[in-house]
Length: 295
Figure 1 (cartoon, rainbow, N blue to C red):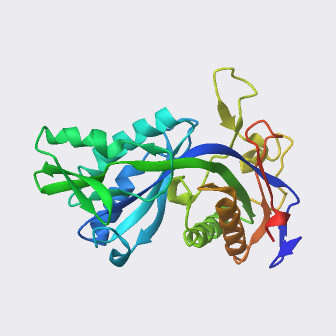
Figure 2: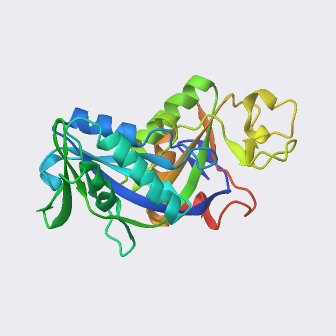
């Protein structure tokens, strides 16, 4: 199978289940909202080592937010409810509450909720108040710049993490260009994030290690361009630029839509040779997303 002359390998991405929350961060200006959203999603590339997987989903215009101010939808993901609760408390409490003019609202309707705002209100030290905005129970916490508004409860659900594809290009710069195009296309799909820096993964990993027992993950030597002559490589001889795009989403269909959009965009770049995907023979997760089935 080919798209614009780019070979789409007959393989699959192996995703895994994760708990997902979706939060709206608003502020007086779009710039301030993005700053708060960026801070709240920092250090969130992979649960292999980071305390959560997190990223910005999309921009939300003022006319679509509860407080009539511009905002950004963000997603924070973790393997379990308790850990996710901790991450929301830390990231909203330390990164959104502290950001100038910012507020935080729930963006995920679910029977399962975390009482983040109900706990954060105690930062008000008895001066906090309760109000209603757009039918939402809101806690108003006095701070130096005014009042910090936070919704009482935030929904979460079972989502899908680890959707992915590899871009194999003729050289590094071409690979970067194609990966950037893919991330831009994926940003138009709501309900997904690409949690790695700039949405692009430079250091694809495998489960465990060939040499060290204490590592939960290590470099995927079969996809390292500088090891093509040293190992049983999965990289074609004419490819010297390899990057991975990893996607987390609210559900499998969102992840599939994002993968499709990203692959099509990457294949529009001259010099991209092949699209593949990462899987671990079922050792990582239960979601099997075949590349050919996306089209």
